[in-house]
Length: 200
Ligand SMILES: [Zn+2]
Image 1 (tube, protein in one colour):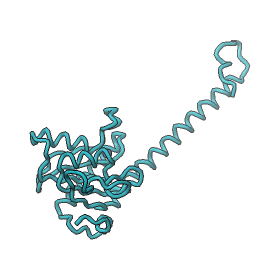
Image 2 (cartoon, protein in one colour):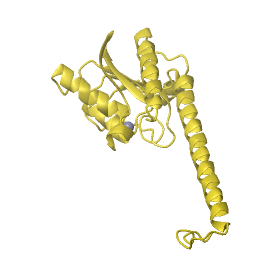
Image 3 (spheres, protein in one colour):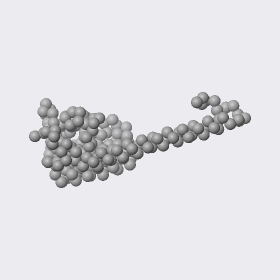
Image 4 (cartoon, helix red, strand yellow):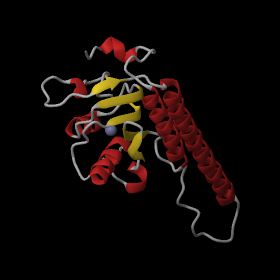
């Protein structure tokens, strides 16, 4: 039932309107996370039409290495349902879950995992590992990758493009400030203090 070919197909057999709507919701949430300086990844946990929990990455804000959207959403869903087994729940996430999050999805007994972009660096559903489909574990999630993947990929691309541009601007500003300081310090002054620290 779980075959890897199906994961990359664009027709998405097994993905319903609700799943696509929840992915759209996750994309909007991810977009707002980017504005707060978080890598734009978000997850929505739902049962039928009902949203149980949703979250974006909180890693930067909380300085939390486990602050991935999926973990935050899974914890919140458990609290809301008063039950660690998220029986019958699906999770839509904009990026293929990493080993930690894929493991958490298995532990939470997530029934269906729908994700957007694949992650060549940490993807643990089809790319590097296939944790939620591993027969040796005591639970398996139905998995569907590539849902609205173009939008999910573009979100991440735009974020990192902007971040690189920002870093470049900061570097240029620092260089300009250095140059201005050098010019000032090379002018003859009547003071011998504070101008000898820079030798470059
Ligand atoms: Zn993760």
